[in-house]
Structures are given as structure tokens and as C-alpha cells.
Amino acid sequence: MLGSVSANGKRYEKDDNLNVVLQVKKELEKQNVKVILTRKDDTFVPLQKRCQIANWKRADLFVSFHRNSAKSGDGIEIWINNESDEISEKLATDILNELNQTKIQTNRGVKSGTSDNNGSNYFVNRNTKMPSCLIELGFISNTKDNQLLDEHLEEYAKAIAKGILQNLK
Image (tube, rainbow, N blue to C red; front, side, top):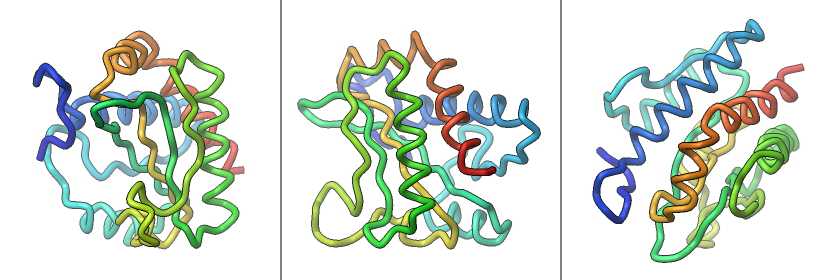
């Protein structure tokens, strides 16, 4: 499963997400944080399996990485469960605050539920037993968001890691 694809068909969400995740892992491990990945390579892992891994390993936090896609739109947003605990909200806020100090196009805020506004939650936020958030790291359909991700990947990873670290203390 590819996830979202750029307008020119040459950029895949799955690749961007893995690049960011591996860099965030590297940053967290520098701080002696044990990181559990649901995938380490170009292997598709269903959402249910991702949640099972986190729950089975009793992870302290769950952070899911994604890229938005739409005909128009830009920027970064972070989603939490609409019945979220304070820790999930703080996790999302801390990560977004750190990202906002880098070169992002738009801070779209911390949001709860789903973009459909139908009262439900994204699968990973609904099915993990620990504080969680889902990062939409820019729009893969937006050339400027893609350029910023490419140019500031390391800064983004450091910012995300810093936000996570603030919630592991």
C-alpha cells in the first residue's frame, strides 16, 4: 500500500514516512530511548498489526507518521483521539510546537477525531492503549511542503524527537 502519492506520481507517502521515522529513531536513540518501529523497511504493515505491536510491547507512547493529500492545502497538523487523555494532548502539542520552530509552511494545529468530523477517531488513536498521536507532516500534494520536508528533514526529526522526549520524563 502506497498511501498518498504526489501530483507527478513520483513521490510516495510510504517513503517519506519511513525516511522521517528512521531519522526520529536515530535522534531518540542518541538520548538512550528504546524505540519500537512497526516497520523498518518498505514492508506494508496493516493498521491493526501496528496497534497490536505497540500494545503487546506496552509502549509508553505511540506516534504515527503520515502525509496529507488534497487538491489544495498545506502545513502540518497532529490528530489525537477525541476522548484523549492529557498526555496525548500534551504530546501532540509539544511535537507541533517544536515543529513550528522549524521551517514549516503552516501550523494547522492539534485536532481531535478525524478530518471527516463524524465523531470517530483515526484507527491508531482509537486502538492503542497508550497516549498517541498521528502526525500529518505536510501535504504530499503540495510542492512547497515537499520541498520543506526534503530540505529540513533532519530539523523535523530533531523537533519531533524533542517533543517526544518532553513526554517521556
